[in-house]
Image 1 (cartoon, helix red, strand yellow):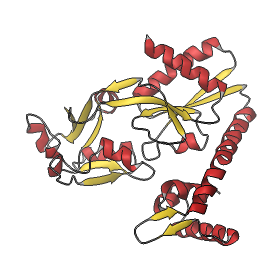
Image 2 (spheres, helix red, strand yellow):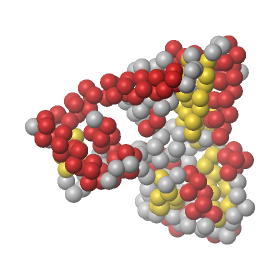
Image 3 (cartoon, one colour):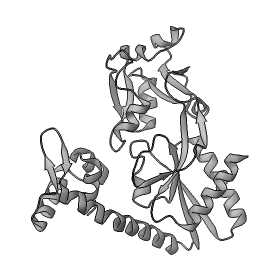
Image 4 (cartoon, helix red, strand yellow):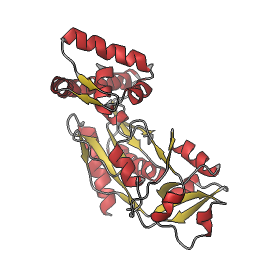
Length: 289
């Protein structure tokens, strides 16, 4: 079931195998066995793409709510085994979001005794995997979020954008870097489970005149920083992130030509716990101050 649902989300065998930690051939074999058992194809496969068949779409829609509930139940059982009375697991994708989560957690635990708020970092290459699997009840993460099974709250943090370049990169001698300039460099981005619309929002594929922007894939944020520091390319981040990730080999330049980086709370549309709802209300109270 996990292999089917992951492939139904990714529609890509290599990314599915990476997420599951299985060989690509093992994933293909598992899907074929399931199709033989059901007597019907679940995916259309060509050399260019993988797509769900109508039967595959229905199976995904029928299985997904039960699978997510099972994942949440397993996580809750593990929490109970560790002796916590009420546990809320909250994800964050940046140090700024982590600070906000911790402040809100302090307010929640001050109001409710016996509550344990546990936080975890959400890695950029898999922005929605933990919330879908029940590893977190909610998270604070970057826009855009255009997922039919996830509900998005109001903007909590909005930061100007910076472009990160090696200290000897030609951009450091420019009076101002533009979108057109990106065609002359390589933009470091991410792959795996990152939705294409998210990548295109933060790292355009082309300049306004239509010139292609070269891309280089990093496995995680720390890899991207290391690659910039080694002169392999450039990448983007929020202005305040320099406080946490500044390096002597990297220069953070203003880049007002892309939207500000905005952080929002994200939760599942179904299965939200009352404790998660209370956390979100306190979060909203803090944002209004």
